[in-house]
Length: 217
Image (tube, rainbow, N blue to C red):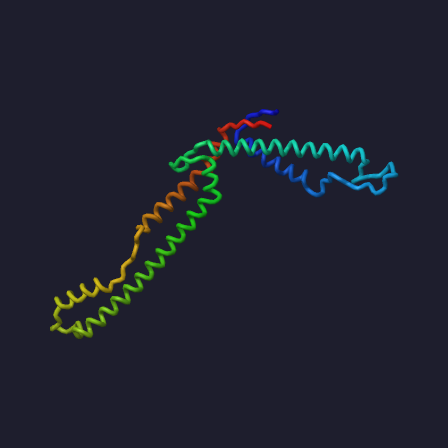
C-alpha cells in the first residue's frame, strides 16, 4: 500500500492532469484489443507494431491507466473527506469547504433567483401603486367637483372638503401589502451574496494551500 501526504492545492493540480491522461488512455484510438486476420504471417503488424510489441504496449497502457485511476480515486476521496471536515470563514460566516463549494455551484444561484424575484416584484408593485394612487387622486378631484362645485369659488366649505378627502383616502387610497418587509429582505440577501462572492475564492485558496491530506492506495 502506498501512503502519501500533500496539500489540497497540489492534489487538485495532480487530479486535473491525471484526468487528462486517463482520457487519453481510455480514448477509442488507444487500442486494447485487435484482430489478427492472417495468423500464418509471422510479419503481421498491428498499428505498425509486431504482435509481441502490440501486446506489450497494451499491457503497459492498461497497467498505467488502472494505477492512475486508483491514485486519482484515493486523492479525490481524501479531498472529499477533508472538504467535509475543514472549516473556513467566508465573509464572517463559518462553513465547511464542502458547503462553500456547494454554495458556489448551486446555492448562490438559487439565492440570486430569489433576490431577482423580490426586486422585480417590488419594482412592479411600486409602479402599480404609483399609477393607482394617481388614478385615485383624479377620482377624488372629480368627486369633489361633483359634490362641492368648482374649487375656485369663494363659498366652498373647506372644512367639509378636507373631511371628505380624509374619509375618501382612508377608504380608497392604494397601499402596499408588504408582510415580509421586502426592502430589508432584499438588502440582507444582497449583502449576503456580495460578501460570499467577495470572500469565497480567497478563503478557499488559503485553505487549499494550507490543508494537508493523506492518501492511501
